[in-house]
Amino acid sequence: MTSANYKDIASKIKFEGRAFIDGKYVDAIDGKKFETINPATGDVLCSVAQCNSKDVDLAVKVSRKAFKSGVWSRTSPEFRKDILLKFAELLRKHGVENSVLECIDTGKLIGDCINEVANDAPMHFQWYGELIDKVFGKVGPTEPSLTSLIVKEPIGVVAGVVPWNFPLMMAVWKMAPALAAGCSVIIKPAEDTPLTAIRVAQIAKEAGIPDGVLNVIPGFGDVGEALGRHNDVDAVSFTGSTEVGALFMKYSGESNLKTIGLEMGGKSPFIVLEDAKITDNLIDDAINSAFWNGGQNCSANMRQIIHSKVKDEFLDKVSKKVKALKVGDPLDPSSNMGSMISKKHLATVDGFIQKGIDEGAKLLFGGVSEKSEKGFFAKPTLFDNLKENMVIAQEEIFGPVLGVITVNDTEEALKIASNSKYGLHASVFTQDIDRAFHMAKSLPCGTVSVNTFSEGDIKTPFGGYKQSGSLSRDQGTEALNSFLQTKTIWISHQ
Picture 1 (cartoon, rainbow, N blue to C red):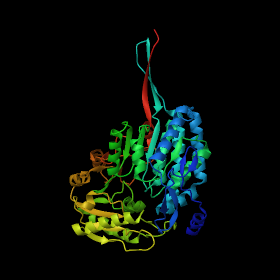
Picture 2: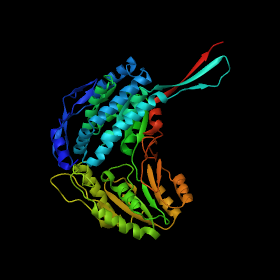
Picture 3: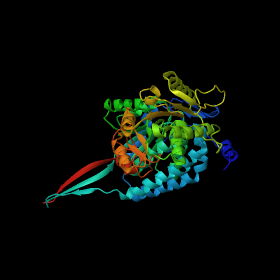
């Protein structure tokens, strides 16, 4: 499809900004609203319900009622499976329109939105739908007069609090396994990007998910706090900053000790060792790892740790690629990078770039953005001569910045790569299998890609070490298990 095709679809979208509670769209109880904008143009898209703790109380009440009724939680695996597969089918049917909606609400590239919203989101519901009837309990070994059953049960009411960088996909990462487990789910979308989650809730109802089982309540941080502190919420699954993740741990401790699953920030290294072949694929991975989604990605490989032997060749090829990146209209398939999410976030990214210049990193391309009356576009920026303890080498920028740190051996690369409070992701490039395994096993992070940049796929768990996450994981069978609790049943039959 062309840019004109996508813009035609965008012009016909009817925006829905109300909350979705108990199977219907409703205004916030207090009637308050806020505006969501297209960050690529600055234009207002629509008004959105500004929910608060009163709306949280209502959503939790209907979620608990639905859970206790068993209308979803105690149905057969086949029943839930059929509905989630129908949900996947409907998401595919509405995939292009939902992708355009996400594009204009986020400033993300339309190609990325098609991949995530039209393809990956329905695939997640299909995958977890097909997994439902393949979860088995256990029978423990006992003496003949006893039987011990180890069974799995849904944890209850789950709140999914999701970020703005992958708004529907992160919501789906919570929704799909939690619904498959039999839980009731409340999604709190980011205030910058609420529209696709709101729309998808209605599609869930069309698929047959009972009223009260899936609710969406837009709003600001007070909504997240109310969910985190609510004594009738059994679990919170959060994706976002480490600072806010720490607050959810606090909220849990000060309320009902609810389970908290955290997927948070990162400062992921991209490591090229001396024997790596500087191929076109490696350079494409270097660019993609730093600039995909405008660098607004928790696993972005901004810290690129390059052996001195191959550094000049690497930097020459990377420089040409960075200079060729086209920043522009996210609805135009020829654009390589869209906008930042907001004026405030663009200023934050610019602040990091200026800090890098002030600290002595060598600016090779890009720099602080130019003021514009339309949209919030950052410049793809390339630094050389980063030092491992510079602010831009330690703090999560969440913007389109690639910085090169030069090393002289494998152990120095490992030391610098490990020097971070985060531990989400790493990429390692080497032709030596021993080095590859050594690095993969030594790096303190949740995912290591060797000779590629990849976060894995739905079959593999995603999450981090240290301040990047908790023991819980998104995706894979691990995500389903995080929404199930284990019960042991002892039976005496003498």
